[in-house]
Amino acid sequence: MIKYSIRGENIEVTEAIREYVETKLSKVEKYFNEEQELDTRVNLKVYREKTAKVEVTILIDSITLRAEDVSQDMYGSIDLVVDKIERQIRKNKTKIAKKYREKFQQVKFSQQNLRLSQMKKQ
Image (cartoon, rainbow, N blue to C red):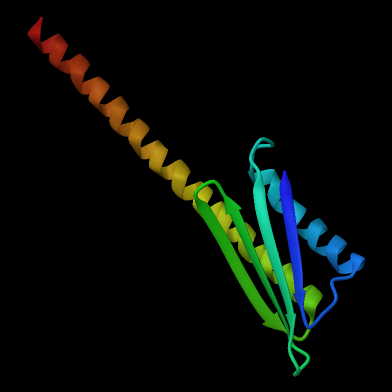
């Protein structure tokens, strides 16, 4: 479940912007268990030069994912930030899976060595 905190600086966060952000960020839910609670903070800033900065921070257990983008188009920035967050999630999941895969291989290898040493004793 995702808890959203959407804040705007120099911009009013309209219902359309809120829905767009929530729709785009709902894509990352598929990477997590339903029991996990995601605390998502979105900051939207508009500068005098008519550029928009979008910052997204997602807090999950002990992991913090953060991405930001600055461009002329706020909706385009939202899309790019969500893509960056998805990349970070995939990277972390791959890293964790690789770590456990290596540990499993070490355990398997040590069990084989134990069997060989027992066979040699007999």
